[in-house]
Image (cartoon, rainbow, N blue to C red; front, top):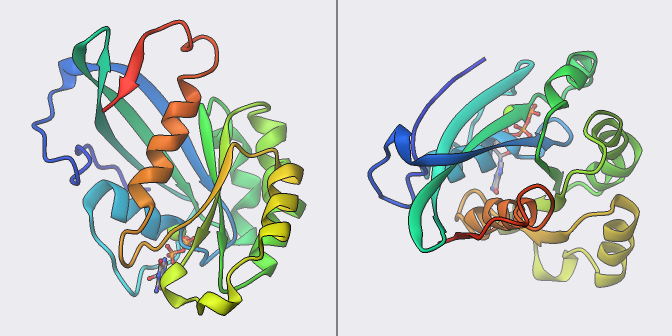
Length: 204
Ligand SMILES: Nc1nc2c(ncn2[C@@H]2O[C@H](COP(=O)(O)OP(=O)(O)OP(=O)(O)O)[C@@H](O)[C@H]2O)c(=O)[nH]1
Ligand SMILES: [Mg+2]
């Protein structure tokens, strides 16, 4: 298990622990090799490694993003729980999913079976351990996809409904496309529901 306490490198703002007013737990779930660690590394460190190692059990990162509350600059701390997608780690995961504020459920655009497995395995696992949390469906490796073979809108819509996600985005951790956006969208969704909806917090 890895631990790093760094601000999101893409924001280039000095971090200070005192400013962190809210702390949210975000979990990433999806098949082995679907690109969860690559998303985390792009988001937290603005890095991409073409040869990441599979995650053993889980990897944990914490960092913060800038926000505003009633016009005052604050930071929102995020703890990112990046789970190993190999089946042998599944028995370990429920205890770590518990307490999540939101989830990214991740499928590999180059392997349709990873989308089916969100429906079959990962979404049920999430629901049984963190019932109603906001979640976003994330397609990875967009840079490897021929535009002709992109997920067709009907299939996307069908899966969005079945999975009960707030949105669906395609990303590339290699180019960075949409990576910041999915994490920010997720936090925006946390801020829409109780107990946070009453607070005047905005991501900037
Ligand atoms: N070209 C490209 N390769 C990617 C992208 N995202 C991930 N990869 C590659 O896909 C492989 C698997 O990515 P990981 O991030 O390790 O996958 P994971 O979901 O964390 O896998 P587990 O830890 O086993 O659950 C690595 O070789 C990555 O470099 C992407 O957006 N584009
Ligand atoms: Mg991993």
